[in-house]
Length: 252
Image (cartoon, rainbow, N blue to C red):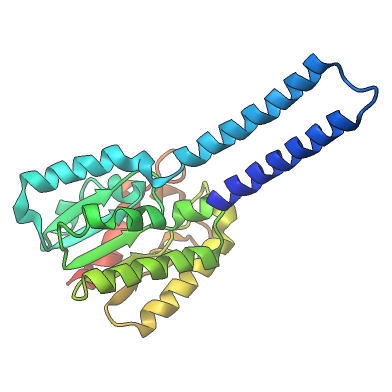
C-alpha cells in the first residue's frame, strides 16, 4: 500500500512540475486566476494523498494497542499460553477460550491489520505476555492492499526473525491466508504467498503452517459460502470450526 501511495504522489508532483513549466511558457495561456486555481488543485490533491498515506500507517491502531496494554497491566497472570495475533479474523473469534479449553489463550487481533502492523507493535503487545506459542493470521489485508507474494513472504520472514531473536523458545504457527468469497480474485497471489510460507515452515524448527485453505474450499474448488458471514470475508461459526480443528493438533 505504501508503494502505491508514493507512486501516486510522485505522479501528482510530476504533473505539478509540468503544469508550472507549461504556465510559464505559454504566451497566450490562461489568465492568472485560472492558473492559480489549477495549481492549487494539484497542491490540494498532493496534500490529500499525503494525509491518506499517513492514515494508513500502523498508528491508526494505537487505541486498540493501548486497550491491550491496559489489560496487560491489570492482569499479570496472563503471561505464557497461546497468543492469537493478527487481523479482524482473529479479533472476531469470540469463542477462542471455548474452542481451546486446554490452552490459556489470549486474543490480540486488531482491525484490518497487516503483518508489518503486528511487527510494528511487537514490543508493546507480544513481549509483555511472553507467550509460549504465537498463532498469527495476517497477509490477507496485505494482499488486498496490493502487496505481492514476495512482499508478503518477506514481511513474514521479518516477523519470524523477530520472534526468534526476542522469544527463542516461542513456537510460531502461521495460519494460511484464507480463501474468501469477497477476495477470490486475489486467490493466485494468496496461494503463491501460502506456498512460500509453507515451504519455509517445513524446513524450520519452531515454525508451523496451518493449512486452513484446503478445507475451506468446496467440491468446485471455490470458497464454501456457509463458512462466511454476509460480507463474504469474515468467518461464520462454521468457518471458525474448521480453523479450530486445523489448529488444535498444532497447539498440543
